[in-house]
Length: 447
Image 1 (cartoon, helix red, strand yellow):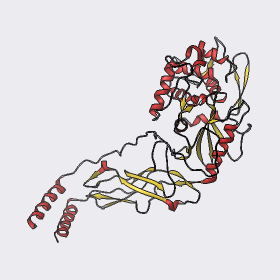
Image 2 (cartoon, helix red, strand yellow; image 1 turned 180 degrees about the vertical axis):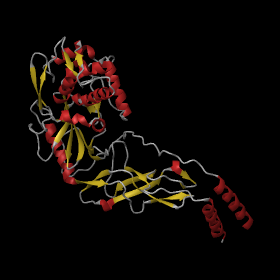
Image 3 (tube, helix red, strand yellow; image 1 turned 90 degrees about the vertical axis):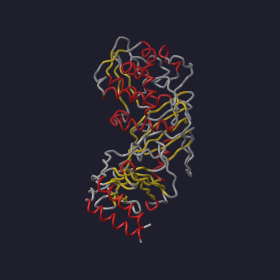
Image 4 (tube, one colour; image 1 turned 120 degrees about the vertical axis):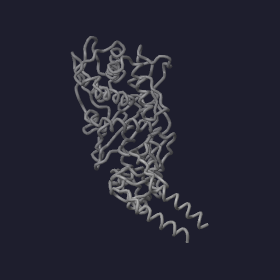
């Protein structure tokens, strides 16, 4: 037995003094895949008169409230949020410019003349700037305007719809249906209807999907709020002016504004099959939430039900949850260190690598937070982080949960996942220290 242990010790000693593996330079990739199903959240006293609804944190994607949120339903003109994302992307990529003048194609012109739809009347032979069409699309939900923009980006309605579908897949949305750039039923766009699709085919997404769209739009292009927050603006079509009043009546100065909820976006949607939809967002007390209501009552154009339901949902979030900041550089008891292989120190202290936040139900506190630390296995050797380790390296993941509160996120996570970093660099131990440890371990194990 003594000989056998001595042999293992010598082999280990040789390995320790001669083998120096290269240190990995990147942490594990973070992938985002939309949750297949989001369960309803219990909400005492909140009775929303809608087919589906969701409230999420714009920063983390935490789902604070959900009702039937995974069922795809008609979204009507909220489809324009996807279209506008692609327009802003084209501008960022230099394919379009704000002052570039765009001609009006025949199909877009005909739609723009339909007074039963939301529109600014476009003129044949007249060109409009990208900025004019963009503002009309967001403020007045002008269908002909967004169709004209789609042609400018992709060359045709079909090509742009294909881009919309591809973008949804990039965001992990695989259960949606998109047929038109403006959100109209396929039959309402005339010659621009999507080939091979039924006349009554209509864009459909779930509340989860719409929250994902809105969150990605705000993350990539927060400047969109400068337009979605405009209550009124005039559109000059070349011969006359159209007074555009934002269909989002929760904006300051409009019919359903509410002082305690400074709503600044985003988009309504209305159709016979959809009812009244609204993707809203509010920035309050230094943080932003996104809400979606699908299938609210819509008796006539004066019906404000979608905004009444949105106000109830937003108020419910602020009245029943506490927004809690999580600062970078903080350690958590019981999840604050990882073992180190061949380092001058045998453990690496870890802290949160970024600022974040979490919504905690009233009645619970930060003492209900539970943290699980997992090391980055790409940096491991022999079950520990391999030294040397640079300062502020992503050495693992911190998964936060709340005892007494189920967590759900738009990307399917059931915990708030933060990077774990080491605030201090750890050098590799020299050969004599490594040999000394090996000898000590040998004799410790021997007896």
